[in-house]
Amino acid sequence: MKLLLIQAWNAQEASLRSRFSNLISYSSLTLAAIYALIPEGMFSCIDIVDEYSQTVDYNKKHYDLVMISSDTSSIPAAYRHSRAFRKRGSYTVIGGYHATALPDEVMRHCCTVIAGPAERSVPAFLRDFAAGHPKRFYREFNVHSGDFPVPAREQITGKHKLRIPAVIANRGCINHCKYCSMPVMWHSDPRPLRDVLAEIRALKTKLLIFYDPNFFAHREYAIRLMKALIPLHLRWVGNATADFGMDEELMTLAHKSGCCGVLIGFESQNPQSLKGVAKRFSDAGRYREIVANIHRHGMAVNGCFVVGFDTDTEEQLRALPDYVDHLGLDLCRFAILTPYPGTQLWKDMERSGRIVTKDWALYNQHHVVYKPAQIAPDRLHTLYREIWKSAYGWKRIFRRVWQSPTCGKLPGLFLLGANIGFRNLGIDGKRR
Ligand code: SF4
Image (cartoon, rainbow, N blue to C red; front, top):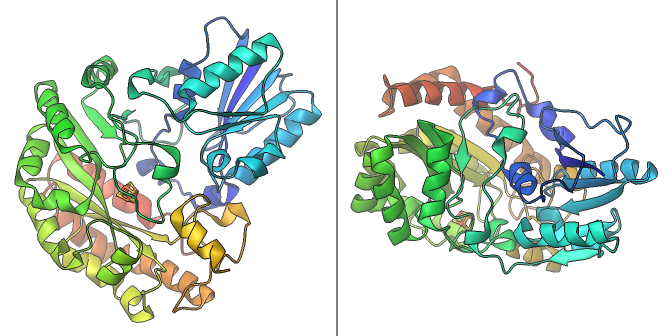
């Protein structure tokens, strides 16, 4: 039997890329983890296509089974691939975020849907498939973090991506921000420390990215993990929430264990906006102090912001690039508020009739897919593009890099590269 694994990508995303995109693109672990769940010897051939950098060829060979992983914005591509392979006699499976949020819809486009985490569902499906009676639907959220396989990274192409390996210690988050898709897919359940450390040691790397959506979510676990990282002499980056910048013990230990930067979803300078989406930490008045504290500990801060909250005004959004400067951030990212199916935000907006399109390809955080409360959709889209353009002018880039605590050190080079990568994202419609 022959198997094809596909990581589907949104064609719109591809149009945003430039020759600098590999400075800000990281390898996905999804296909590598699924590959590791496949029993040895079950297939005579396993091909893997990451559409980010590879093309799906429907006629290359006949596949008995085609398994496609997809989020919401890439689901139209997943449907297209499933249709094409079914026509050629393959059995198709779709899993991932969109299949978890809207399994009934996805069911209409493939033979089997796998919702939720893959660790138990994929082996169960493969057993049934081999026995000739696969079910239409698999969903098993009751997964223990000790079940996670070591991703088969060596099977996955790293083409056009930053070659820094990634690890996940806890793929869930303890918070429930209304717009966030994480809680729909994962529970917060840190992996056994020995598994995480064994995986890191085997990578034989000195640079590491933690993909955990909230590295410090379980404070005591994070402390134990960071203490164990110290003797490995790594440099690493990870995601944090804003209150990390008020916790002296965590910041001291993070720096000591090799952390050189954190990504924080500040989301808005407006506390009302933060409260409106159930952000646990909503004291935006302390953001500047938080960034300064993290800098004092020698770490850079990548701040993320969302535009289009109900309390956002045009004036506030126009001031966002200046606000980024005021905070002293090293890097910044912006996204248009996106009500992903399955989230509380989606439910609220569906109920009040504010969703204006279900063209899922537009659900990539670069389009307005709902009726904003205070700003016309076209105007919000224009403002979004202007914010990116203004925040990534050369003057601002050089000031950010120059003022960064990483300036003059190796992480400072990555920071410059990432700033250039974001400048060239093509959000403003111009390819550079
Ligand atoms: S803190 Fe971040 S990862 Fe956690 S629920 Fe909120 S947005 Fe999602």
